[in-house]
Image (cartoon, rainbow, N blue to C red; front, side, top):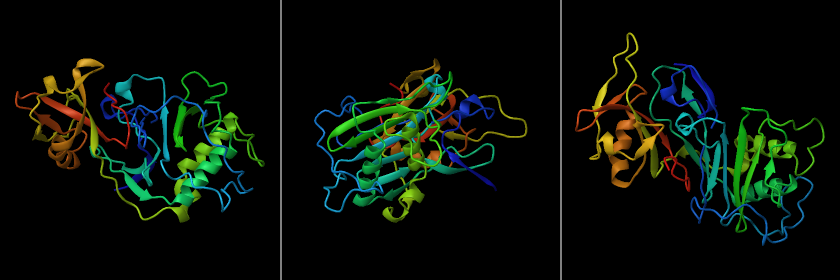
Length: 307
């Protein structure tokens, strides 16, 4: 079986296998999804970085309370971007990688597993120093430049020394050649983004061993099944939750598509079945209603995508 390496930012399963969009997520280490508004007021004056962009040996660490989340959006209805993951999340000293290997088969697995690695305080300090050097931790929050219609928008949320920065920009902005882009420009945002997407190479010595990431919440979108593909017979499994599909979560897109965040005891019932299922699996509830699912792990602090 071959594998294509790409971010889990492919078009949600229920729009078919003919298209692709790019990626979603959120969070905060101590404030959850309701982080304070963008701004740098009250932020302590940072020590000057060394020429390499790393903090000086005597500088206090910014690792305590640090949070980072990077994700992408595009001008599409939320049901079409439901399965998109952040490309990188750092919370409680763990780096959760949203770039995974997806089997190039159809129907593909319903469960897309993420990985997590511990990141050292020195690694976090290097990220903070690079963000400061690129002019991203000031009063400016929009680094989009002049985006084209339908273009992809990159989002960064960082919590540094108690201050939350919510930033937007173009991941594909020109970064120039040779010298680093000027701080506070669209190119500087894009250069920082590119470092995050290659964090395993940029900060390889600051990352510990990789292990499967076990989420404490799943985002679940239940929709009526599409017609069976010729030559493929969808398997059917009992819906393990007491709540039938008609009362599951809230409507998304239309009344027959239902969205909810599953946690706790319901997560313990649903997750093992999800890991054994594929994109065409039909779940049958107590009323004999059959739905297929789109499921994705939620990262720490991410707000409810069904709200």
